[in-house]
Image 1 (cartoon, rainbow, N blue to C red):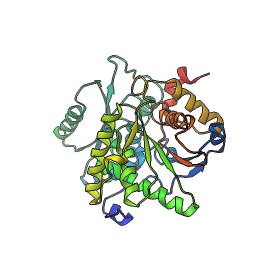
Image 2: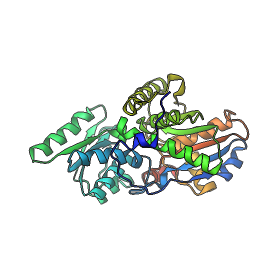
Image 3: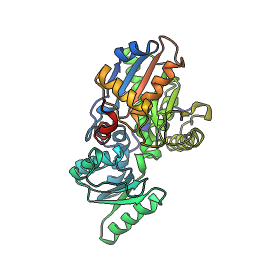
Image 4: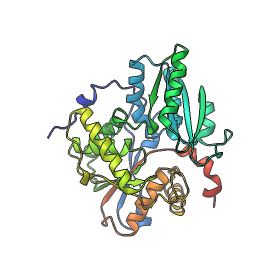
Length: 337
């Protein structure tokens, strides 16, 4: 078996937006409330760039590639409250680049340019252009059109896929798995299970590849926020294999991939009672802010699994917090109680 080492990751250009490891913290009050597993949290909400979040790790590799290719403008796509779009804008600002966004409104006519949350931050962070398309439209074609417009003006765009989720972006979470393994060793903590939100697949698949590459054998349970389980697991395995191939190491197998879909609710970004409870519990028990789209539903999944006895008493469960707190302000009407 071939393992990935820090030296293998060092072959890829990388910008550094966080000069330190993010903390591993025990959540004693949540642990007591659930009465079973010992819950820990990986605070990737504290990553660098504007308000942090998991996309920062992926953008370290993607923006480095954009700079190496001589790009002057980043182009990406996301929903109206996209954490990924916010952080891509922040990376562009830090690097002296321009940034264009393609926003997908999944309900026609629902986009509000004056909305709060991440949408407000798009303008504050200096988006050069925001184009709005409808759900089901060809998002890649919309980004390619922006790149062609820039090329006609003598400029060079660099397209970053939604969620920064391609093999190069997933390297950010291969590196995160190495980081967790190093912290576990340094702090003499072993984990029996890892739980993470599973959306555009880059974070989840990167963790799978990274964990396998260092023989970190705690099962990784994804809590799906968008798709039916079978479709999500297929996407995850495909991206994990592509990421492993990029590193020239062994890929995770189908048996390693789990993306539960019981907490998706009505669909992507649509609130659920379980998400509301999870966001309120973490805020009131631990002073930790989750987001309503990703980490809120992922924590709802962890809580649900704990309540039905999926974790043994005394097991250590690590929750990877993917950030996204700015989106809370766009959901005040459902979260206030």
